[in-house]
Image (tube, rainbow, N blue to C red):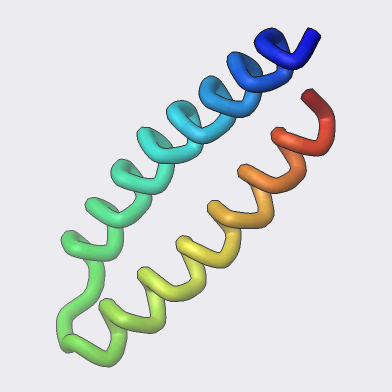
Length: 59
């Protein structure tokens, strides 16, 4: 059972990493100034960590 939970956690992290990378590319395209990029990246990373935690709790 422990190995199945670890596998699910790894899948959560891998999926979230791919999603985070795609969303950060959006920041790169849309943000004009460094402060705007930083705000965009900060918000996206917060959401990403919440989604990853929720995914791991549901595993």
